[in-house]
Image (cartoon, rainbow over the protein chains, first blue to last red):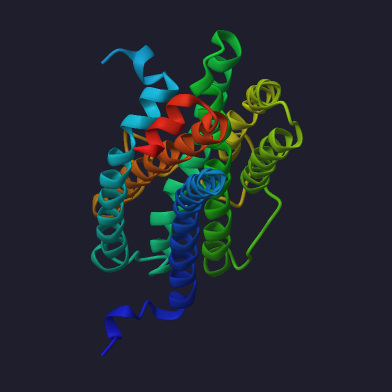
Length: 51
Length: 242
C-alpha cells in the first residue's frame, strides 16, 4: 500500500533528513511567531491589571 | 516606495503583519510541492540511489547558511556606519536563522555521508569550516544576549560578524583548495553542471523556496525585535490598543 514511500536501503536516511529539516524549519518559524504573540498578550494583561 | 520609509520602525512594524500571513501560507504551499518533487518526481540517481534526495534540503540549507551570514555582516556594517536601527535588528535577527540553516546543512550532510562515504563525520575542510560557521552564529547570539545595553551589543556583534566573514570564502572554496572527502562544486559550475537537469531544477526550486522562507521568518523576527525595543513607545501602545 505504501510501496511508493520505499527508498531502497537508504529509506531511513532520506526520511530522517526530511523530517529533521521540516521540524527545525517549523521551529524556526514558530518561535518568533509565538514569542511576539506572548509579548503582546503579556503587555495587554499588564495594562488591564493596572486599570 | 521610499527606502527610508521602510527603514522606519513604526512603518515596518505596522505594514508587515498581513504580508507575513500571506508569505507564510505561500511558503508552506511551496514547501509541500518541493518535498513531493524531491521525494517522488525527481529520478533516482544511478550511483547513489535514493540517498541523493537529501540534497533537496542539504544544499539549499548550506547555501542559505552562507547567504544569511553575508546578509548579517552587511546589515551589521550598515548599522555600524549609518546607525540605522532596523539594520541593527535585522543583523542580530539573522543569527538564529543562519544557525538553523547551518544545523540543517550539517545534520542532513551527516545523514547523507553515512550511506555515501560510510561515515557520518570527517574532519575535512568543508565540514570543519561549516561547523565553525555554526559556532560563529552561536557566538553572535551569546555576545548579544550577554550585554544589557542592546545598542552597544549590536555594535559588538556587527564587528564580530564582519570579522567572521573571512570564513565564507574558506567554506566555499575549501573543496578546491584542499583535498576533501566532500564532493566538489556540482551546481555552481554553470558552464556544465554535473547534475542532470531533471535533478537540478527541483534543487534550484528548493533554493528559491528556502529564500522565501528566509524572507518570511526574517520579517517575523524583525517584527519581534522591533516590539521588544519599542514596546513602551506611544505608537506601539496605540497600534496594539486598536
